[in-house]
Length: 596
Image 1 (tube, rainbow, N blue to C red):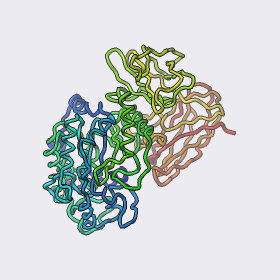
Image 2: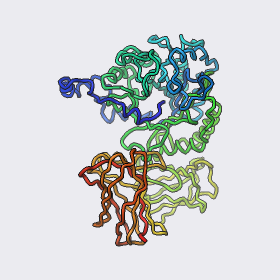
Image 3: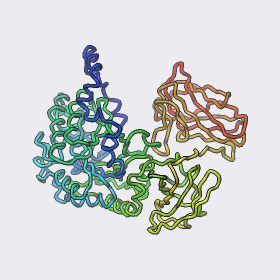
Image 4: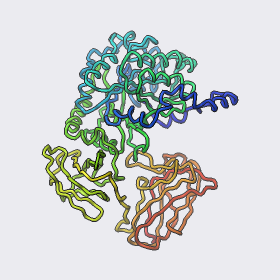
């Protein structure tokens, strides 16, 4: 994997920067035709795309495998523990090419068993596997005729594990995908490196590298293995449009293949790929997949024992599904070819839950609720109604599970693990549906209550309430963003309003006031330039010049002045840009406290 999505994004070249002005004009005129010729999916209709993405959207859960020569040093170089993720040891330790290549002589994974790996994934409830065919160290984990730096000719193993894995996946009905590092390659001359080359052997022409290494190897994996369901590009360092368009047409070798947003050159692919976090609101309108480690590394490190608990992994899966995404959960096998024991143990436990509750995950779509105080929700819409799967993390002590703001008529409720589907009591209290549940939670991590309703879900948004001390907290997650660019972003618990690049965009918070009056306002803001925002409640307005914090992730708590809220009841506070001299700002939260 890589250190940061932002780092890769910053070094992408403009899609036309490699052309002179005259060529640029010609290319712009021919762009639609050129894209059609290069991108296999450029002319795809929405219906065709839905059909191609169907299996992936239904799968929801997959296994990521980071495996390669880096599992030999396992995080240690010359008796020194190298910081960072395991598969980046060559980069982070600045290991010379010839030295690093010596590790291949010790890479002999005789305990590798493809059937066993697939069995572990299948038992966990995973529907697809994506494995590193070549990572940034340039080592091909397949029988490549393009370069001798590969597992069949460069190691004592002399077997093709990807061929064996493909056969095992086909036998068990598991979809197979290949990760391929198309730009970064620290062993072949001309390949990119995140912080630049450290060995003269790495120097060379990148166009030549793409033509002579990346293109033929991608052709190999898409021709000699299959069917391949996913091609997972990574870190598009220096990948301009010209280089990307050498690779893109190769997708035609596997009709219907899905590829992600990390190719570069301005191509967005089929899926967004948040890494190591779950986006606050998902990616409405885009397919997406959170990839995540079980400990702190992707590739094996012998001393990384910081394992996430099964409860965390399961609730991550549920959270992701509730936002319409997939969970690609990583394992980092050892140099012997074994998936680490703690990973196997956790996957077994996840599998137990999935066998009982998988109906609530597979083929389920995003929750109709913005937030739920006790857990998450997924849904399945069908003729005449909708099935809501209520994943309860915090079981109600009073036996009354409140489903807030649900307008639809509730038909039936029962526990998903109850084979008899014994009906639970349903009542309506105002805008809420109340489901009577047993005193004890059926599952200590996540219990699923099935609620069948008529029609498609209609939900009255939950309004924020003024606290008993008179304060009003307005977190970013509860903002209603208006405009083309502005949106709520960030991982759960650390959300912010961002992408506020268009001064015509704005955000607002609806909330209920019980004790009106004058309030002192404060906010957590981050900005690289000093723009001015205007806060308004009705005709009461306050302007504030945002301080420069130096980074969009470096937040500062600031006082915004006072504003009057004259009447009780539903109230809306808006924040808008003062267009003159506008500079984007990230906002994590606003807080209003009664003025003293």
